[in-house]
Image 1 (spheres, rainbow, N blue to C red):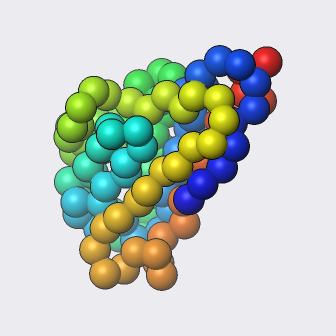
Image 2 (cartoon, rainbow, N blue to C red):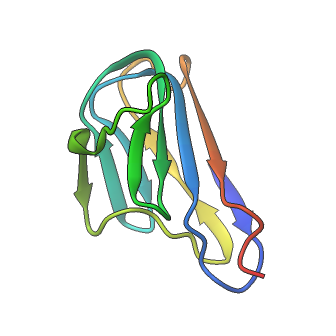
Image 3 (cartoon, rainbow, N blue to C red):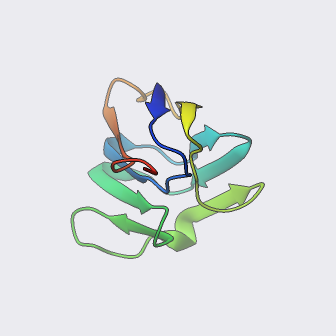
Length: 107
């Protein structure tokens, strides 16, 4: 997915994956890769990059132990054009919704 971050400073988005999240679902942006190593059957996870948390939506459980990172941790999006790539098992994108809340930008 591609979008434009307004303003002049980086933002730390909240990213939600909702639906069937297969093991080894990957999110990639600007060379950073986050891999979620657990299967969530018809649930969701919230990746809060500012607060550096990963929580299951149904019960708020801390899921950070099921995350691996390549090249850094947690995402920051610079102003301007941004791309977030989500890849995963065969169920994606048919059975998963991705939502990105980057707030109002950096002013």
